[in-house]
Amino acid sequence: MRWGPPLSPKRILALLLSRLDAERAERDGVAADLSARIDEVAGFKAVPGDKGEAGEQGERGLKGEQGEQGEQGAQGPQGERGPKGDTGPQGEKGDLGPRGEQGEPGPRGEKGDTGSTGLPGSKGRDGKDGRMGRMPRHRVRDGAIQFEMRPNEYGEPLPFQQINQYYSGGASLLQWIDYTTRFSDTPTLLQTIADGDVYEYTYRNGTLYRLVPSGSAVDSFYRNFSDGDLSGLVAEKHASI
Image: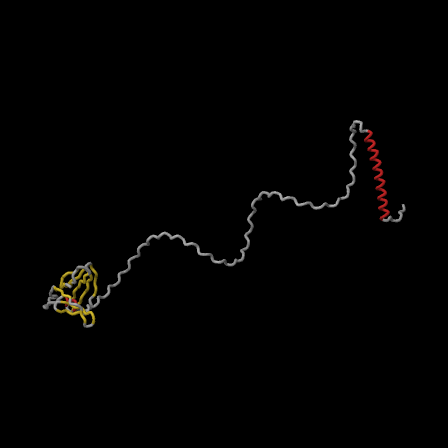
């Protein structure tokens, strides 16, 4: 079989149009004949005929062009919350942030309860008694004693009455003021008793014990002092001011 020369596009288009016109005329004739037959049998009751066999499936047509994208639909309702997942690993420690500004002082708190009183501390050791100072400078005149206030200046006379006793069997009569001023060594404080302080006085021919009263007792000299008791009165001071 021999092929002719290739057809031009115009020739091909003309043949297609001619073919379409022939098919359209054929369809029009079929439609007119079908219309006439319908009119012919319109008055007759149609009797359903037997169902014909299924025709063969035609060829699949060409895929049409993709249509335009439709508008986005409305958002559906939120679904239920899913179960809690496993805890993830701890992340690395972040860098230290900048220091914040100091806040304002808070309000003052309420006063707390008073604490209980502590236990008393142990008593400290008693200190040593100091040495008795010397008798102030004085002079005795006319049964009265005067104490020196300033150099060569004496205070008013203080009269007193004296119980005179002999001491150590001496033949001379001594007064309270004699025992007070004629000691040979500085008097020493021995003990403090209920009536006052007891001092030891040392003389050339013996020792006496003087009670310097702290209350209503009388300033006196004694021969003996033992276990806080004075005995053997030698002389005592009786002065009225």
